[in-house]
Image (cartoon, rainbow, N blue to C red):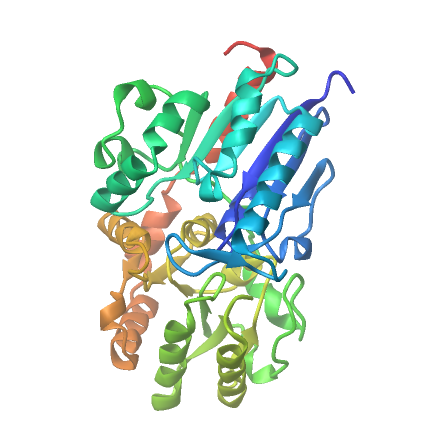
Length: 408
């Protein structure tokens, strides 16, 4: 259709759930009767999510992150470079076939191993399409020194200058200023728009969710009725996002319950990427403790809405979900391979929006102390999160309207 505005989105998805969940949240809000959205993703579990009308995806071969610079094929048994060649070819071919009016790249300016650069070059140089290119950045990438060094070595600053029409920062500059922290030149900072955090749909009657054995949108879990929430009991949800590095948090939480009888009810969600032996260990111990267990949930907001306290590792997407549900939270941020989660936890703590427990301080006793404190005296955090304003989707809709009207 000639009057259809086409948006292509790229999400490299080499680790965890945050990238695809953020991309889907944006897509679901930008879709309109005259807007079609196609998502390029390497997520191995993208098919488990519900896609609204006028949003679809192209699956590129998945890659698993082994370190900051080492990625290996997720499923197919070929050399890493062969998999990367396939990914790059699919990305460029999709851009050429789809001919987008807007191309939104999530988080990685170059894509994985520069795989998105050929598509960006084609979109910039071809006369066949007129396409705006946008980089979407979470507010915090890593500590300043590591990010500056990485961006200089990989010539990211050059790419930001050359290939992107705009840069959307999904955060508030007064909370964390990447322009200052990452020494971004004025020629690039002029392209940057701080959208604010990205909201999720809030649920009003979250406490009514646990009246049955099943939970809509969650993968198979324990059916232990002792893990269901009663009307007057405090409720604690523990989630580790994708779960690939979340075993320690789950283990310490269950060790806490194994040592001290809890006066609250618990639900744990390990995440689909936690190694199977670790996930089975958590499931078996949870069953003995009467803890509700899930390995994956498409609609985490339902579980969060039912909780009085959410314990997480503090990834960007999880924090957006927690704040959207106006929940009190405790962050236990990992500190490798990046300091992103720790910095975010410190920023949120300074604003009174969440509490945190440092990774090296994570013990059953310290965790118990923090949880009891937050369940006993939640009001300062309740007041702070109630006043937190989300503007992310509003700003992006405004930019989309400007693009469609051709006024920018």
